[in-house]
Length: 359
Image (tube, rainbow, N blue to C red; front, side):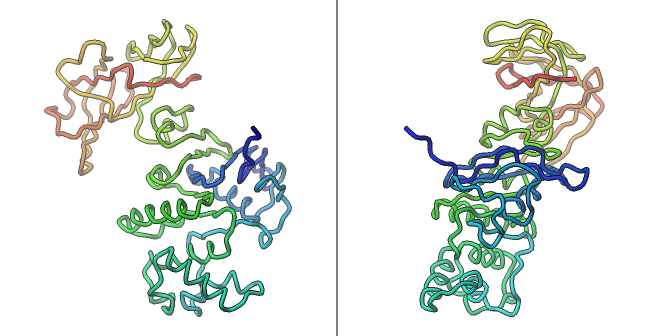
């Protein structure tokens, strides 16, 4: 059976600005109807990569394919991609209908066809009752819907989104996340979504791409990336993880013993590294437990309580281990502990994962 041609394929895409490498040999395949979120810290290359996909930047080397066709040198106006900007970039002198129709008016279209497409797109994004409104009369969420409809009405193969929800308040941002996902699934279109917001990426995307210094660190489903980060950078960037550097002291099928500077811990793993391998033991903060005594088989960490952060639905406890390593423990309840007092934290071997190559 012939494998399906990817909707989008990046082959060793690199972008240099003089001596600075903004995007460094990026490879990525995106399937049809797939929602991909690209995230990373400021300066990691995610926006530059999006601009290359849109045709606003030309890659220094590498190839960009859409549905099997090399579009590396195709200008922006001839590409089957559309970009939704962070600041919307709407036309204040046009009403909602005029803004949505703008991309269609750049080519010869029958007025009735344009009107029908605009009405259908307005209905899709929930703006049917606002077609005659001026942009200045709209809320932030409504402006975002106009920008989305304007990009989608031209029926692109791929929609590119550059932090489109960053200007919205928290409540509206959550609602728009659901709306974007609904629209994407209804259209069956590939979405490439750039964001620095982990909650947005993890709530909408089929797969998440984490970038750092121009390179891709990991590509995975949100669940897999959260549970099993593959690099130290991803483990520190995604979620709230505790990392312990150590060396594998014993290895057997399904389990390893790791010697860390604060003591020994046991980790369950399907792929035990050889004895002597340097590793990071990764444990999510909400997998840590505090109790007078741990359950048999759990790993015990002797520590000192240094602080508590109240986060509404949970509490984050900061602890220092005997070697000075700071760890975090998330609890739904207030623990019976005192600041600067000794305490113990516990985690099960099954709740930890390994990253090879600790310093």
